[in-house]
Image (tube, rainbow, N blue to C red; front, top):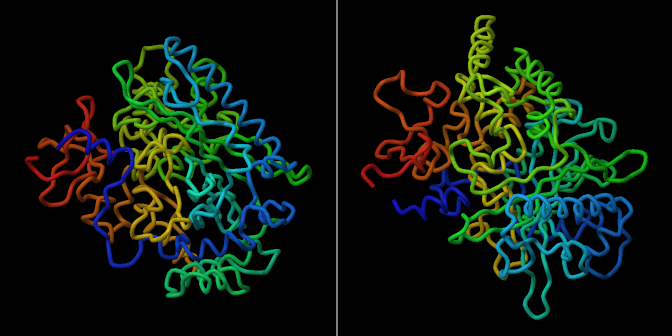
Length: 507
């Protein structure tokens, strides 16, 4: 199998997977109808309306967006991140040129576009995250409005730029309409079964009986930003690499300003490796059996004092652990002196927790612990099975012939997680206790992904896998289920790892 083909799948997920069924995997868990999104963008779910900007006949350009009082802290923080990125890169690669345009070794995103009247954000998708109700059960989870940055060019239409802005709101507010989580889940599942499209679908979604009825500007919790801050083309001097800046800003209830906050579970690796006191606190907190089980389930919420206020997700990060990944270097063989977790310490803690009755589904080894610690972070997750650094680039309804059959709105990781998310919606609808656990970012949760069997999302061609060896003892317990469908074999990508992709045997 040619290396370039492997790399394309690893980076982008661009090769289409065999459909799991004849129906959309995102049914009931996301709105991806192009014409409906266009209608909603022009209506009350447009970014202008959601942020309470004055209504005019002019498009809501980024010059107006970042001039809003609530957005001033966001613009300032992004400028500071650009400055820090340039400073760090110059220090690490003093011979590399960095700037805007193809003449530079490191090509920066043109930050002038962030404040230009010719750029604006348009609604590119709506994602149901009621599977996150474990964070705040009263909120019934979250709804995310995904806006994609575009640039208008006279006579050439609009060009999509590599940046998304997510407006995150609670899925429900009982004080607003008295709706239960069960009723809201039922509305979303009904949307998945609906045959409506375009203006008809959009009108029902925001109606009094629709799933988006409670999605209103006054309920905004935060915004999340994902920006391709720089691109490094492959050359004789350096490898291909693209860096994505991740930031979070929470709306302060009093000031009504979006204030910079730590990213959820984004471990501040640099501080942990240099601050001995913080390192000890983090080790003790995470190795508490309660938190270790939450880490295994994927429902852990780390205290803010251990977290970073921004992250750069690099692609390609590769299958094996590397310095580009957030948790790299935190787990090492005992005796190096600067590790946060020693291997023997992790092994002993896992055995102790198991002896006390803990049942681990994902973390069954040191390697499993390290991999989970990486993909539980924002940056680690975005480095895994993404389309570049995005999991939801969104629908391009501004194209001449918008069609989801021609444009893939989301990554393999996103589609692979839909059966689990829908299973949670069904449990909520039926009044049953929901199981919020999830698998690794590389692989869908096996026990809830029957409809993915044989696809590239699970164990089909191009799926992520782990090379199994004849002797069971040689196979890491955390990854024994990462196999390939009949007729395929797991082929390692690179020489330093047994992780790879499923391809036809003998190829």
